[in-house]
Length: 106
Ligand code: FES
Image 1 (cartoon, rainbow, N blue to C red):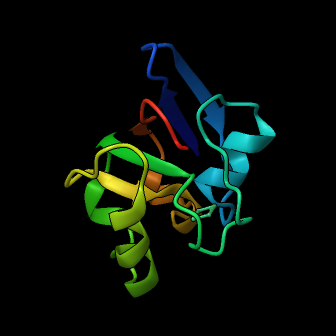
Image 2: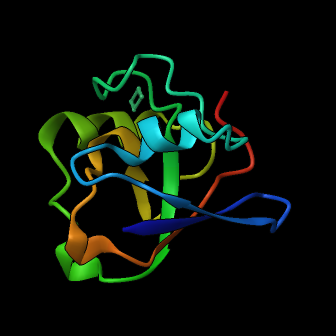
């Protein structure tokens, strides 16, 4: 399954994300600018913040309790589209997801 990342400069990059991997891991592996992932994926840093733009939104997992708290600590403004990409694990149903990177993570 594939995910498209849109940078704050509007540059689009589509990458293959293996099922079971988080979007944060995949973005770092693919050298996508704008995802830091400082805590390594434990929903504890909010530097993997993304805005989910489009795709099969019904297939997204619910916002977790810890994620909910950390989303209040993002550097860029939180919106109703905000998620922590380390908490978004790839499934076949999420193929074609489009996420936008915030202007800053720190
Ligand atoms: Fe730290 Fe996602 S990588 S909250």
